[in-house]
Image 1 (cartoon, rainbow, N blue to C red):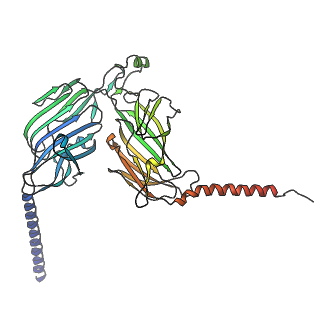
Image 2 (tube, rainbow, N blue to C red):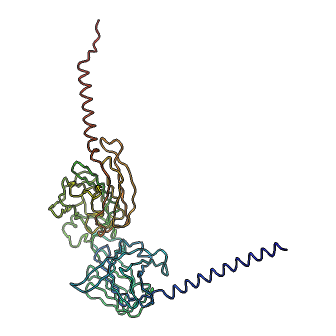
Image 3 (cartoon, rainbow, N blue to C red):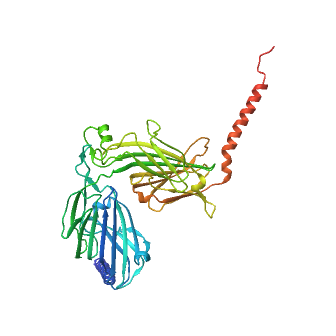
Length: 475
């Protein structure tokens, strides 16, 4: 009986403790929610550029804090269909107008703790300074969407134009109430087959305007569909592998392996080169046969080849500020066609290799694809450091996957450290500089000359010994 009473008391004490903790948690969450800042968007303007197969969007927001406490961040919402195609997102705080306009970059991070309804993904933008009660701030958000244009029809003949579909919302998806908003969609030409009308909506030449819309609640979404002609080539590099080999004897060698595809409407039927060359404005208007490659200045020993051999249809223009090479594949690329090739060149070491204040050496090179207006599904940068290099570290202005390898070349003993940087969904805006730092002792530069000298010395001694050695058989 006493044991039963003791157990009952323990049970009552445990239940009382749980009840007190729940009350404390609820009161804490209630107090935090009551003091939480309340934001609303006074004006929102979204401009969508569909001129290329890489979609660029600029979203301008004026945010006001109507809560009782300062706000440290503001949230952005993206539908699930756009999240997987989101290549880059940047934000900045804008102050002033026209010539006195100042732009201050802001940090943008995915909000993993909070998600919107229907699978909407939220991103958090941190303010430079907490936004006080009644205060407002203007924010400009730029983001890029890839592979968001659907060819329709999926297959076209050589003489047909390329039509594509773009899906979005007439209303801006936002976790806040928007007082007034407008969306402007710019197409590459006036040839718009059809578009969803959500009044008020108008078409003026190459622009479709949705809005203005007043007092829209949070997470409002009205789907729209735009069917238009886009004959710009959909140049997509399925894979780019770049090998950057550093030699402290004064040269940097770069080798780039490309797998290029036309990702637009697939070509159907036969191909007539006579028609293609005689009617260039009609036949194969969405194809491409020229590519512009932007290389670093002062390049030398440039080559361009494929599996057959060297391709001579290229033109190189160099200067002290830039180098451009116009290349032409062996055949024009129509929808669905592929081409594989290699581009290689050398650079003076003093242009890309420097020494930091703490004695480390570092490579300063461009990360992205040098071909203009090209999407890269996957890029791999392999930086091959000289033998004897230690403690390699990479500094990249965006998130990448990184790991280390070891490669062997002529006269190598322990191998060369290789820093491997990989990234998917790369756009021209990723063409920013990255750095690879490492330690290197100058004595390691003497390793290969001493090895060659030793080999020749021993060969010379062996030759002398063989000449003066008498191995004849005598009585």
